[in-house]
Length: 219
Image 1: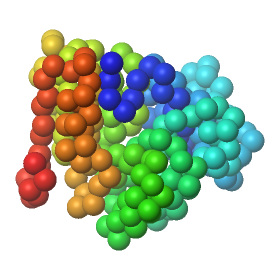
Image 2: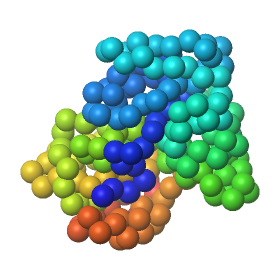
Image 3: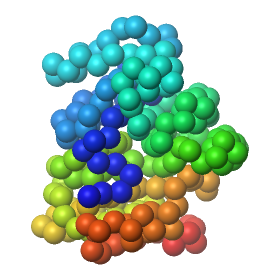
Image 4: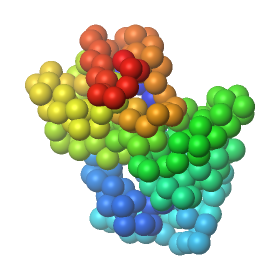
């Protein structure tokens, strides 16, 4: 079991064809993530070969969902275009949007978070400015290194990306059900409390580690 992300998750990557998107798509595939498509309006109808995996590129999130059944989007979109990309994901009602992008204006983050709420909270947002989340041995959506831990029964929710990696490594002999990096920006989607509630409800999570970050009081 895991929270938010598991072996059945079908993942698309908004911004997959950019340098950062390509790099991390390759790493996510290596971790066993079921990546079913990318989204780039300018390259719709093409495909990208990544280590023998032919991944189609769609013009919109809605099209990608219709054609592939995707239920997770990971966003590697530059800050100036991130708000529009998240709004597109919300309009398509994708269940989970993982916003990796750093440097998004706080006003933009507040706007797309409020938009998600207005639309009925059908899209869970993780981030922005976060490392994403991983359910070891099942799926990895973001930039968390997949080789520093193993599957287990600890849940981790962290505001700090670096401390996410450190804790996963320190407890690697025990292992994790899921690790969620919620991001360090002033306005984020999924909070410590949201993740704690999900871990509490997960029968395969026995312990929870929560990590805050200097400079805030969320923890």
